Image (cartoon, rainbow, N blue to C red; front, top):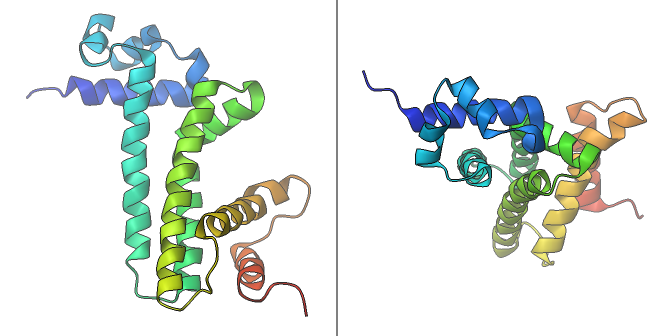
Length: 190
């Protein structure tokens, strides 16, 4: 039975990035965790940056798959949008790497960690923008700047699910959805 050394290295590197963050991860650590020589790692990846890039690419593909699955649902725009936001949040929390990267960005501002977080957010924003444009085309959403709308919707959702809890009693999913619908559909003005 042949061992897929590249997959083993990617798994070990992901574990190292999760445990130690981007900045503190070294090729020595990855080699120890994978139980392979450093030379074996360099056969597949010339630098830590290249290794990190491959891990981000794989995660991006997983995120796109999750978002495509939700977008394929036969439902109203608002229902699909809320499910899409839930799936993005679940993806972020299920992937310890992104939790660690966000923590590293907050604590020490590592450029590569920030780049990883921004990349995932860019995929989510672009996907939301496309969904909003489709909904505009089908008459479910009034004409608007889809990029701005996607940014505002994602930011509001992330703020209610992560930032709010830091200084308030956490909101359950239903309350978050109620507030999202309020602002997206009717707003707060009479």
